Amino acid sequence: MPSTHIWIANAACSHRLKNVRVLLDVSAVPSRPVGAGVYTIQIARSLDAHPEVDLLLAARSDDEQRWSEIAPNSTVAAEVPTSRPQRLLWEQSKAPKLAKRMNAELWHGPHYTMPSRLDIPSVVTIHDLTFFDHPEWHERQKVLFFRRMIRRSARNASALICVSQHTKDRLTAVLDPSIPIHVASHGVDHARFRPLNRPEEIEADLSLLAHNGIHPPYVAFVGTLEPRKDIPSLVEAFAQIADDYPDLRLVVAGSDGWGAKEVRDSVARSGYTTRILRPGYLPAEVLAPFLRRASVVAYPSLEEGFGLPALEALASGAPVVTTTGSAMAEVCGDAARLTPPATPRELAAAIAGLLDDQTVADQLRVAGPERASIFTWERATANHILAYRDATEQVFKRAGN
Image (cartoon, rainbow, N blue to C red):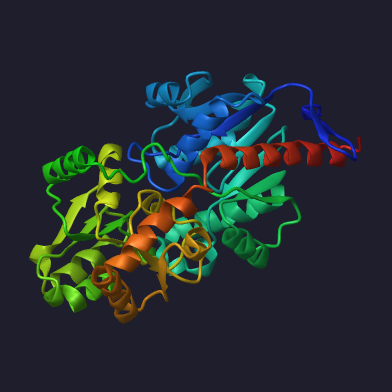
């Protein structure tokens, strides 16, 4: 029988008898993490220091050093194959054996999937439902795979974690799982993403940006270049206002993803190719200066499960323009300007409005960090612990105890 003695519930509270041994699968985190990868790193770092958790990590065979530095108090099993197909096969065939060998008491799959045959409670994180709602935004093989795996997780996991209320609502509407669903919003690294306005801090930021070929004034975007980010609408919006702001540039930062050709084509036909910069993936030490020195940060994504770049921009004190209809509105609240998705004209007007009205822009620069302050990785981790507790108690109940 699974180790359901970790937490015992009564009518009043849950009492911890011992630390839970959580096996977190970190094998999908790339060397240049964004979005879900940043989430996995931050949760691993927080769980590593949490007094209720003994953390175990399943990492790729070439990735032990990184995870040992991220989570120095944890046990790292660096034995997952490096190639993606072999990694996914390993998850289904050998991960349960690893869990048993390491005496894990709970499995956490932070990226949609889990082994199909586990003898211990399991928790799976669901980031968004776009594989169901918008399959055209993804490669066909990924759609087929992740639809199957998300359905399996919704059926077989002991509890689920969603990164926003929006994602939970979509998950309930699409699959209606019968297991507990917890919302654990992302946090933000407030030590890194924060306003810095002393003259020497501004000078340091500008020097670092200049070293990467970036010079204000600019409109900033950061994220993987893929269809859901709708960068062509941003390029079109920039083209609509470019003549009114002859010194302004658009800087589109991020690695190429599936569908990046559409981005290249939109830049080529914009008429402003020399004023649209693509510096690629920005390292961590450049990202915060890039956001806080932007005239406007534009994040026109069509759909997000959370929208971490928008939150990081808010925390950095940047005026943000993003879209309605998914998690970005939930995250940003009144601290950003919101436009309907896929509306270049409205997006252009929102950006121009912030460029023209410094008072409003400054109000957002103050409102952003205040809004972002409620999003912390400590809070996110506390909600993960609640999900772990719920997962073990669900198994305990099903066992008839």
